[in-house]
Length: 224
Image: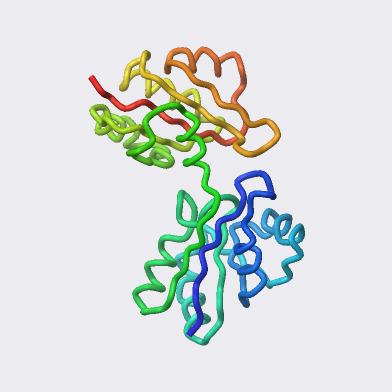
């Protein structure tokens, strides 16, 4: 039987990949990637010549059987996302569940993920936290936030630049404009920065500074 390896990849700086990750990508027979163009940059940089196949949110359901049949036939497969750890706001969960249901082996390597550095450098309590990832794209956003109003642990969200102001506006309405927030963007990249202040101040800041890059938002828990 083959084995499925979940291999975290750098969230920006290519130097953040681990030695074990590179060795694993060279050792397996096939690498499943979100975008072959994006992953080619990493694989070429580390001289990884293992064949790639696309595996992303638009085709993962129909490719499950194909992938598991390869594993059953003894083919070792690595799954990587464009950045970070597979399964964390990226494809991976469905495949892992299916592979485990067939009693096949899954190994997840430790490595980069955006939420941890954003949390640790936020200055908010990091011993216990709630990771929400991306909010629902349309319906259910306010309801989800209302459920989190009394949460005393630090809240962590992912957000895209074109939705940042909308999301901060909803945070202000539901959590209150004075709740503390830490917003990190482009972590590990050349233009990495973190803005810390109140939700109101963050709204003012990003109204004048056009949001660019991918964002991790940490919100102080409700300790009142």
